[in-house]
Image (cartoon, rainbow, N blue to C red):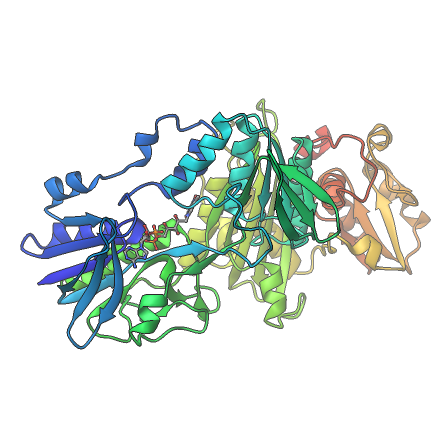
Length: 571
Ligand SMILES: Cc1cc2nc3c(=O)[nH]c(=O)nc-3n(C[C@H](O)[C@H](O)[C@H](O)COP(=O)(O)OP(=O)(O)OC[C@H]3O[C@@H](n4cnc5c(N)ncnc54)[C@H](O)[C@@H]3O)c2cc1C
């Protein structure tokens, strides 16, 4: 059996290696148009920033090595220009000399990935406007850095743009990010992205949200960007990172079925509409785990797993990919942001309504015991059905332990867990690593409390939205110096039982403390005193100030919770 694989990086290389392990007699040909097969594109930003020092570390398997170790015929700088399904051949162009030849196959795997989008903006072809997808791209960027580039503009605030921004900053450049949307990292909901906005600004990154680039102009020694607002910024180098498009041209021309999201339509075995052709990775359109509708998620994990699934099926082992959950993580300077499943924007787009179809828990928790040095709070957001049985998704932003929590929730979702199961999960605990009740347990507890009516949380922007609201601040006197909302009623938690009758029961009372723990306790007191319209401001004053970043005064935001909050359990 002869298998030809188009594209020799994440999905293609995995498919080839797995196939060889399963079938020593298979003939395997990998056709890769680039200069390298099997290189670590995810490592490129860190190579630019100098964290990965040696370029060779990014080269995972050279063609000769793949050939020697795996007996795979890897041909770099060989571009497939057509798939001839009737003849079961592909037409290949040797990029060295432009010659073309035909290569036959029994089974074909398309792993052509995706390409960065280059919108038709005047001046976009300037040599200073780079993308970051391949090693030669990284080489070109490194050359700018070696030639004393001082100012960089990253266009696009997705995860590659953020990684590029962090690493250019690390390399000593002044960095601006220009993002058309009102937030960076679109998989996060806006209020969670605000935590990143505040952090980026604190690192000196010049953030332009809600602005596009109208024009690039080459000046003598720099590029000038005119933004949609008319504002001008200068850059020695521009990194364009505004999204990717699946490389589906070959498949489309060959008459393979293309899905509604523009990827090659595949079944659960990664088989296309042709029984001898598989498609894997960024170019394949798979199913979304949460809603079971078509999904394109250009990430390395799915690409690698899909390559393996295709190889298994080619070798006669029935295997299915399942669906993609969109679990992703990015480091943004000292913060880490991670997501799994759907966000609230997606729920709203599908017509789901908070309170009717889903609920939200947002909590601020320390990643490890508060009394053990170094604990810095993380913010977790969980979206779940109103019967608690389905977890739609989660988002976490914090400094430490974010990866562990997002992967726990992602795994729980994959195994069909309810929010009540999150409460029961058992975590390995000692003070440097967690708390006796891990933040994921806490999410489960809080979700359970919301569903049983023990507590209600308001939206992050409820104070502006609800006109008849009264903000009750239950922090201690001394804490008000750091931050207090104008017009808030101040009754410290310890005095609330005695002074509850000072509050106007006809108003919607929004209770705020430092991170949400004392506010929950206060809500329980008021609810048991007969107050009916009471809600807790999620994540407390810390979250309020971060989510209202750019809107409140600009005194430094203290990251640590008040001592009282560390001691009072949230449950
Ligand atoms: C800078 C950067 C950072 C990233 N970081 C992360 C990360 O941290 N985490 C994560 O999960 N994902 C990350 N990704 C995404 C991840 O790398 C991709 O999702 C993954 O590589 C997709 O695998 P693939 O096999 O579909 O395509 P690719 O790995 O892109 O491989 C496709 C290959 O096909 C070749 N090709 C295309 N057309 C032809 C043709 N006609 N003939 C021959 N060859 C062809 C291309 O040259 C390319 O080498 C990152 C991507 C980039 C660019």
